[in-house]
Length: 329
Image (tube, rainbow, N blue to C red; front, side):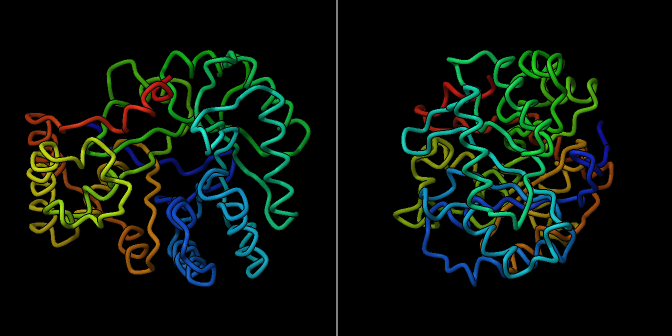
């Protein structure tokens, strides 16, 4: 059973044991920047120094980059404390990757223009693999951007072991980002993503460690999701699947109650013990503080989770059908 610790450095810079995902701060909109930066500040002050953002997290004129510009203009002293990862080279309007050399360069240049010098890009990731562009071609363009000093390093997102090896041969990535949680454990397959990254000494970043809210212990019925919640379109939240997944989530909650912590803290601790850096995201300060609190699972607790989830299958795919073609590529 794995009892590793999450990466201590990424792109040559120290990172805290738990990162912070900024997606929900701008994806839907409606959160004033003055409110959003309270959660960002809370994350940083509680050790979450690795921040993950995206060019398509929100509209073109109000995405992660604009919020980051606002934050670091207000707190310039924090720029050196944050290791910033940006996902880009992706068309949010059509939900398609754009990872040609020209598109990658344009995406990076746009990010730099919006940030306007208040913060450097420590890690840039094409959000998905472009089926029209060989990974070697994309990586060469990213290497040139690193050499030109426009980005500190590059990463890969939603890739399989074969793609990781192909990219590494050209220019080693500083990190690989993958969806990873107690409900999404595909990266642990033998010879797969995590085994390959361990072999090549590549840090792994786990997004959605709470499986879009499943592992917070707050979802009991479909009525717990607002009517306009985007998760209604995700298979795991649809009728039939929802009821089965509630039972699995309740088991995680039982382990948390016995330990005197929250379901979210158990779920995040499990991700860390696989040697992966979790990047939970929240729009509320109280949730940020909950997620950032360090919890250590005992061997017995980890075994209990493994045994229970190993006997059951999470019901429903990770993403709706329209996104499937660009996953694990």
